Length: 167
Image (cartoon, rainbow, N blue to C red; front, side, top):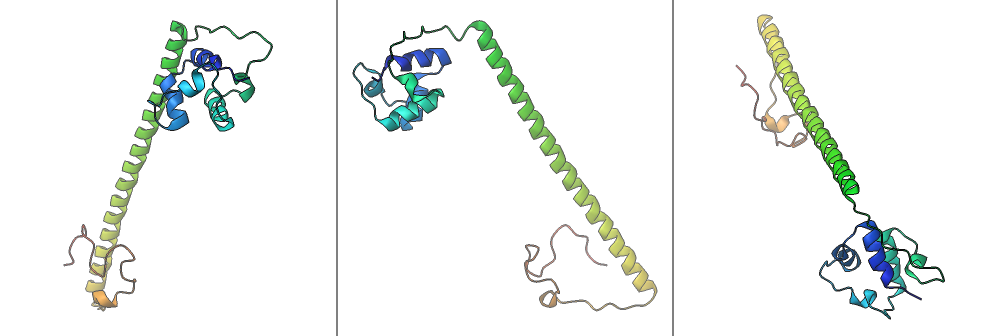
């Protein structure tokens, strides 16, 4: 037989709140749980499965057997709360470190790309000077005759911004 007292016992043992269970079951933390917590309640198998999943116990835990009901323990002692909050702070610090590391990598990559573009511009300038010094003419392509297909780089035949103008 289903034992609605087990919900109260499990909530106390695991330090969980009634509104968290309500939200888990129905998606609404203000949903009353009287249909599963009052004496004589008869929840559906699906509801029992969800309750067991919420508490991470087997469905059998929610039923009365011939054994005595467990006592409600005082789970959230000061030491346990301190340990819980300490773990939460450590997890938060690790997340912050990971995000800062990710931001540094992205910043470094952008800087490397800028440096590479500047080096390419220097190489192009040197090649242009060398061609000019040897009187070699290189035909220019009109934007519509560009060998790279339109918007392959997100622009349609026009020069992207940020490059130094040709001289």
